Image: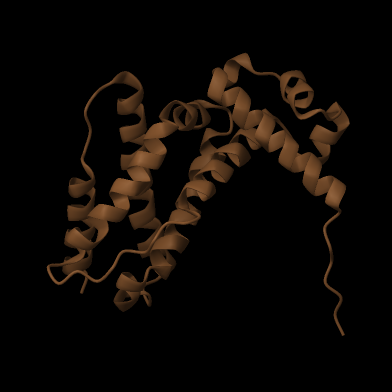
Length: 191
């Protein structure tokens, strides 16, 4: 009989405290203005505890970005079947995602521009590819290889990052309907 390994509750709490501290600090200022000392003081833990969980600031910034992103998607309703295609099915879901991300646009932009930006980007692409592959409306394409899903997710993440940057500067960007149209086009042409 295999025993399941239980995580140490103290370790879970200290890691969570560090990620939440980094999140709060990134809400307030740019990554370049934040030190490990700032993060450990805000988390109420020691510097050695920081290094038990993260090799550097970039890693904790990436974890903070991914945690907030996962929270944004936590209670998201899947798109419902729409008789007139994927564009109208995905537009409302993308509108909710955009609203949630717009609220924290500066935070996400700071994470992306931080030393953890490349790691964060890779994690977001992997997260998005998994979410897309599990979407009920996309099941006819579920048999596609990982490259297909990563390609689709990477394009979506790139467009969203561009949109986040535009929101930070007050510039317009693609609408949710534009993004939904891309979904519709990609999946209609890959049938």
